[in-house]
Amino acid sequence: MSWNLSTGAGTELAKVLNFTPALERSKIMSKLYGGGYLAQTVGVPSERPAATILVENMAQLRAVNDAEANCAVLRLTYSGVVYIGYIFDKPKWTPVIRGRVYTAPIEFAVLEEVAES
Image 1 (cartoon, one colour):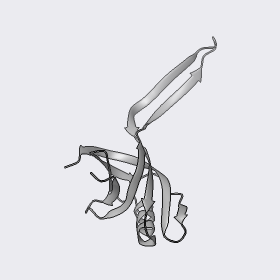
Image 2 (tube, helix red, strand yellow):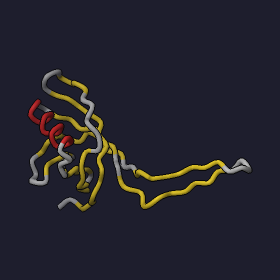
Image 3 (cartoon, helix red, strand yellow):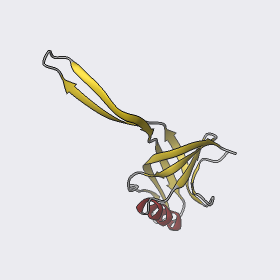
Image 4 (spheres, one colour):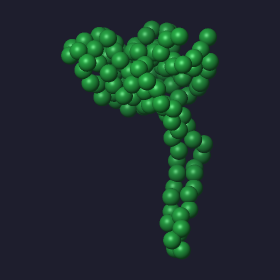
């Protein structure tokens, strides 16, 4: 079982070091005249988990940056589940070995979730 971020064709772009499930909700909080609160949700929550990825060379770093910039549909595989979607924001890279190995936290916008085959 591998934990990775890959293209739809199966080319590995990065390893996934950790993964935290999360939901993104559209929520409106209003304070009422009586001092209470009213919470309203709009639509259905969408999955937007956070992950930390690791690249082992500059070619992988550039490929991840390119995939994010072009909103490429990717596969994030973690613990037997494949999340199909795209990277939500530009990765903020931190060098582990400068010029070679980097890590970045990302948020992943999930379009579909399937069991790993």
